[in-house]
Length: 96
Image 1: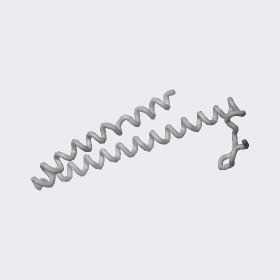
Image 2 (image 1 turned 90 degrees about the vertical axis):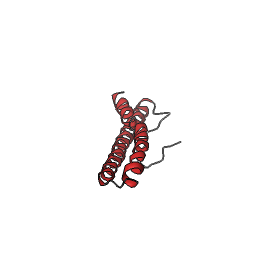
Image 3 (image 1 turned 120 degrees about the vertical axis):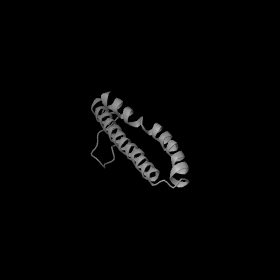
Image 4 (image 1 turned 135 degrees about the vertical axis):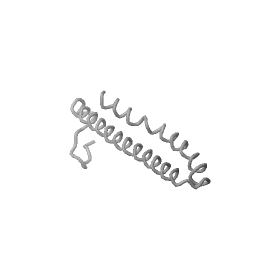
């Protein structure tokens, strides 16, 4: 249950990151492009880079945790209900 809560916590930044990216568009047009401010260009570039990196790391960790949960669930179903969830070696087709 704890792993599932951690996976849920890792997927939560994805929604606000889209909002943060939309919030970053205003300085791009107002200061970096129209104003020609070099420091604004650097700030916008660094903030965009950080937003995408946070999203990527959280998404990857979320996917790994969900894969682990799925594997544990499949293993326990195989042990508890061998008639309904037959165990098989990786890559082989279970008997029908």
